[in-house]
Image 1: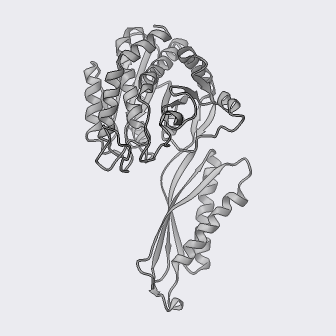
Image 2: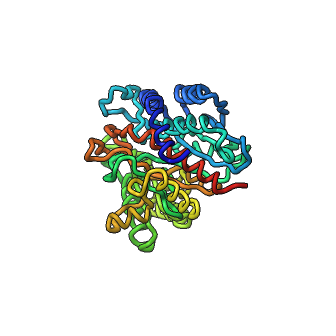
Image 3: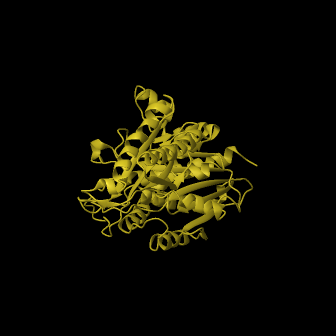
Length: 408
């Protein structure tokens, strides 16, 4: 099978892939609660004659190939949505208060399309392709859960790939960007700070201990970490996204709760930020006679792209799509005059990338000039469905070429 034949065959399955995407889009579900999504994906795989296996709390795996000896290449798609109401006006829009605003319905549909193509050419696979359908990416827990359940074993995975669709990109729809070797997505941590004071009447602040004042000083002081404690090259973002405290204008409350996130591209910087955040919060609180309890919840490490796999995948994508639709990160940076930005959103495929050689691809799925101007996680974001067969073909070609060039 050559690249042109693969693209043509993927396009011939367009209606099936789009139909799957629309079913997923109108029935979005969050975290591990995929009560409709999981049975639907399982049924589509079984429709192809495959035998998917449960993996972890709400994941599925299926292997295709194995007729010939060879290595194992993993393709991953996430299935969960976001807890936000949709405002797209699409005829297949969700009305259940959740939304596929990050494109995970696109990811799942593309991997289902890849499953169909791979099954049709199973005899040609020089090894095994393992498909990973994962829940709970948005809370950074699904990938880790499936690793713990053995997704990288039985058979043991040699390399892995993921695709993320991108909306609002000013490059031709259907273009693929291959991340360069190294970090392509930052590590992330969600934190909570509980500031404990002593409530009292607002007219008598001297009889209490004001946690609101302490919390305000904590918020301001945390910004000094980036401004005064990190080197110019140590990129990081610290965000306070929520402040909860008090219930009336004339009452000083007992407690204030802050929550936020940190993101950075280096694991040492990540550890430093977490330590300094705790030091500053507790120290500032103490200076106002309060205490501060700092806790870290959901998070994920940086996403590492294997340099050799990055170089090889760039070649595969140019074979498949041509140099006008396949770019490396370095080529995109040069074309933009050095203005192309790093990805700032975190991605829990990072857990896979810490275990096996991995690569992340971006697929342009909506040009602002073509009516797709809203970014991911916006209630009006839309994605161009014409990229769905392309994404399926990208999955298949990358897997087949890797297995062909890396025999046992």
